[in-house]
Amino acid sequence: MKIGIDIEEVKRFSKLVKDTAFLKRVFSQNEIDYCMSKKNLSQHFAVRFAGKEAVWKAINSKKNVSITDISFKNIDSGKPEVYIKNKKASDIDISFSHTKNTVVAVAIVSE
Ligand SMILES: CC(C)(COP(=O)(O)OP(=O)(O)OC[C@H]1O[C@@H](n2cnc3c(N)ncnc32)[C@H](O)[C@@H]1OP(=O)(O)O)[C@@H](O)C(=O)NCCC(=O)NCCS
Image (cartoon, rainbow, N blue to C red; front, top):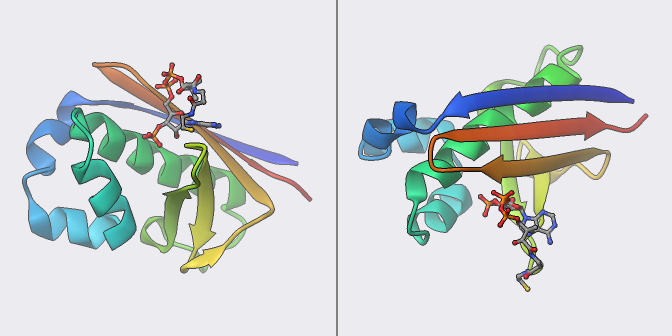
């Protein structure tokens, strides 16, 4: 098993969420649509950014995966699932939590 964690401040994202080029460079269209549908969208973008870094830390032996190759889709229950290069990564689990100021993400890779 491998683990990765990341924490981010939401305020770092409050301006960035208005930068469409940044959003399209870093997030999948599904992630953009999900976050844009939420009231506190900066928190949802920030936690996904933290999630990408957490997953990257957990898998960083795989040098051919970059932060932008990692994305998340929420299933109906609300639980997020991990995708690498648009393919579901069933061996990687992610958990998100956010407050007004801070977000945190933890990733676990099973082996
Ligand atoms: C899941 C739950 C515990 C989240 O707790 P919270 O303190 O309100 O919020 P947190 O900031 O800690 O966590 C939010 C994140 O939890 C995750 N989450 C939501 N539902 C989840 C679930 N069923 N399993 C695992 N993770 C879940 C999401 O990633 C969410 O962030 P996102 O919307 O940006 O993806 C809470 O929503 C809950 O009790 N849900 C019960 C199930 C439910 O009512 N589902 C509704 C859809 S049927």
